[in-house]
Every structure is written in C-alpha cells, then in structure tokens.
Length: 226
Image 1 (spheres, rainbow, N blue to C red):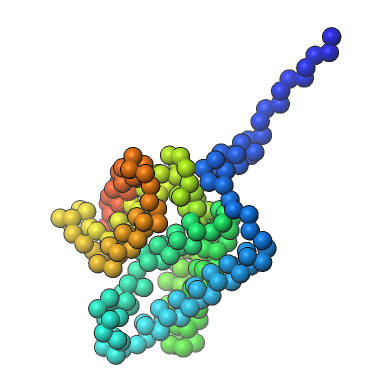
Image 2 (cartoon, rainbow, N blue to C red; image 1 turned 90 degrees about the horizontal axis):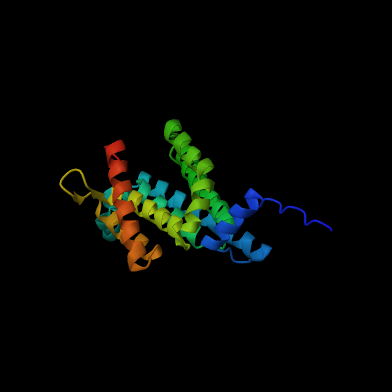
C-alpha cells in the first residue's frame, strides 16, 4: 500500500504574509499609478520643506494675520505635524510597501529642500539638526510600513492605531503637569487623527487605553517632548 507523504510544515514567511493580508489586504495598482503617487509624495514634501524654511527666514510680523494666529512657524517646526502627515500618506497608500516608499520620498523631498534652502538661500546649515532629520528620513520606511496596518482588522491594528494616537496625544496635551494643552493646533491634529484612524466603539476603547499609556511613557521618557 502506498503511504501518504507527511505534510510539509507551512513556510514561516508565507504564513506571515497570510496573516498580514488578513489584517489588511493591499489594493492592486498599476505601475503608472505607483509612479504618480510617488512623485506627488516627493513634490508635496519638497513644497512643504521650502515653505517651512521660507517661514523661518521671514519677519514674523510681516506674515498674514491668519498665519500669525495659527502660529504656523512654530507649528511646522514641531514633530507632530510631520508625524500626522506621514501617517496619512501611509494609511491611504494602496499597500504597506507603497506606504514605505511614499513616506520615504515625502521626507526626502522635505528634508532635502529645507536644508538646501537653508544652506543656499539663508547661508546657514545646521549640521546637527540636518543629520537628525536625514536619519528620520532613512528610518521612515519601517514605521510607515507598520502604520499602514493601523487601518486594518484585528487587535494588532487596534494597538498600532492606539500607539500613533498616543504619540500625537503626548505632543498636544501635557498629562503630567496638571493636564493642560501644550499646543492648540496639535489638538486639532489629534482630532483629525482620531477621524483617520476611527474604529468601532470596543476597539476605540482599547486604542484609547493604549494611546494614554504611550503618551504617558513618551512624556516620562522625554520630559520636553511636548
């Protein structure tokens, strides 16, 4: 009698891919769409980098009243807005790999144009800060890849969304100093992030608990984070 060969163990990589697809399946896109989205991310980042540096070199009192009221110069000089934009680019990309590419190009455009403007237009190149931002640029694909799953299904996605909200919460509200607003525009960023990463009530409760824990951890670890 012929014996049935023993079943081969499931390939670990294939199993991981299957689980990731269960969390959130990528959308098929053409090469043309991929290139267009990548170029748009690069151009968007470059434009914001130039605009941010332009504001740095402007006389604050010469800015329009609306920009002064919004304190736009300080707003763009903080981390929260860049985190929020990177999260939006990531979660609205068609796949995790495209999210990694688009966010990388976004930061590449932003950081390159900001510091080129600084060196060539303003005659000043803050090397230390530039190295920090270029490091952020190089490392950005991994968190962007993970962030893409924050709009997926299952508890890992809920925890990821809670972690993102926690980082933004830590920037917007000081929790260890009498619970007060750190920077008003970042409260609106937090509310926008709640919409982008919206979940069912039970999942939202878990995400909120994770967000609070992450925010407290950030502020305990980095006292001047906010």
